[in-house]
Length: 370
Image (cartoon, rainbow, N blue to C red; front, side):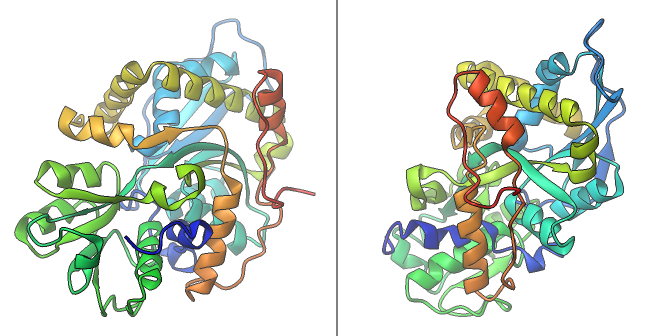
């Protein structure tokens, strides 16, 4: 094991994607196109009239976005919105979702930390706010057990990450650095060969032997394990309390200013959804898989779905301190110029909801609106 748990230092892991994020993907690392869903979630009949008839919500067809998948699939978010209907859109990459938010094509989105930071800094703090958390964890180092038996065995091996500068890529580069090994961040060459490979083709690359392992998000990690790979490290073990942000909830500042009642209703729905997921994990897992099948055309088999689901925590806390640490480590790695993240969070609506529900309020790590 590397010198363990310099937890904040390890957090670089999650965000360093930033400046490269214009081309890098979020935690999922899939393509870049967006899909407009054909149907709107039904509004509650006779529900309370809010300030707009429709709210446009964007998210990924991925397990780390299960708050959106399940909340919409089960009608939990719609219930809180009353007569306001949900118009969902799905995305496969963070930059395209940020573009949609900036263009007004969506109002609220579920997204990874790197594109949220990138979108905020590129707009000089004017495009979005993070208003809540959604998920933590779900990233693993998996390897070929015939070639790699311990963490020290990674030296000289070929390990895949989803893309240059994406969240997992930076996490792995930081881990390598803390081992005292040297790798050129851009070329990926050094004591370990970092091979940037789209998650869609990583299983084929592993099967062919062109990589010896991968530092990847779920469900890619579990897909590799199903092919005979072995989990060597769960990234959550490198973080305080085994938690780091993988999915946030963002909103356009314009929509927040004009439709705060709708934003609060959506947040009530996400809090209720996370509570339902955690109280009914098997039903929630099945619901998420049903939603994935509807969006992608096929569901995940049990041998992939079950371990992937277990590795993700669904929480309301955006874990702001981990995002801040990630950004600082991205700067340290030379992948990001020092950002001003002041005002990236507005957690007042969420904390009002949590307080009313008798739940602990969450912190913004000093990065909230003043």
